[in-house]
Image 1 (spheres, helix red, strand yellow):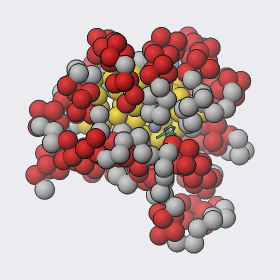
Image 2 (image 1 turned 60 degrees about the horizontal axis):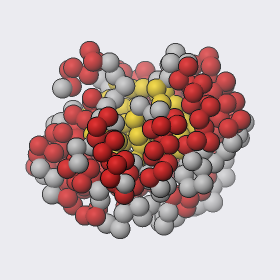
Image 3 (image 1 turned 30 degrees about the vertical axis):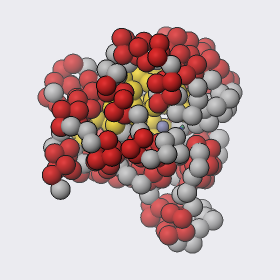
Image 4 (image 1 turned 90 degrees about the vertical axis):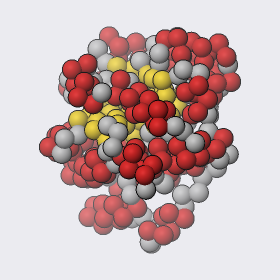
Length: 325
Ligand code: ES4
Ligand code: ZN
């Protein structure tokens, strides 16, 4: 198909991808079997049938349950490598992947097992010509102390971790709750990102900018409800990591033709397209581009702009970006 061939041919970076959200049902069964973890499902079809969500929390409950099959360094390496192979097939050249250490350390999996496994997958991806970076996310439904403990656990790895992010249940857990831990992360030279404006109000996007001082904003959909906020994002050139199929599956938008991505581009916002949790939301990077492009009738120029935004919005330095621009 010409649209999908055109998009596949554009060098693209994925900037919003939870590696635990790339766990396919088949892989969930494989890891469950080899680790002797019991699952509440008997077949892949049963798992997929459970992926009918009406909001973010519905999804998170099942996503944290799925992550329980991940136990060994090899699991994390295999998970990451399967994702990078898929990215390469989609014409991806670079990925900045989120991981949720608290989901694992809370059930007794050491931070080092998770980090060493993911870093091994990233080293293997390098051999495929895919560059990557790691972003540690704090779970915002947990408290500030838990986030600080996670930053301390990460201390020996901070030379291999590019930044910190903020994910999980947004409403009721504003960015301001993590002001001090983000300040500490900044002092350690880390880049800062945060999920904001997915389900949460425009005020949470203001806080991500003014209280946390993020370098990039994850989602940002609801920023469009506030004209001054949209102007601020456009004026300061903040990159937004937008996730069309995620928004559809979590009922953030009623349909893809109602997705705000086209309006974001018209407003001069630096939007990018990303998969978020592809195994749960029904599509990897290329599917997200193709489906939203078809629904919004995006032009070739707009698609080129989205792909370029993903490279320029990445945390690669100028020299590493150049071959993709
Ligand atoms: C997430 Cl879509 C989304 N939103 C917030 N937190 C998350 N963790 C994994 N996927
Ligand atoms: Zn996300």
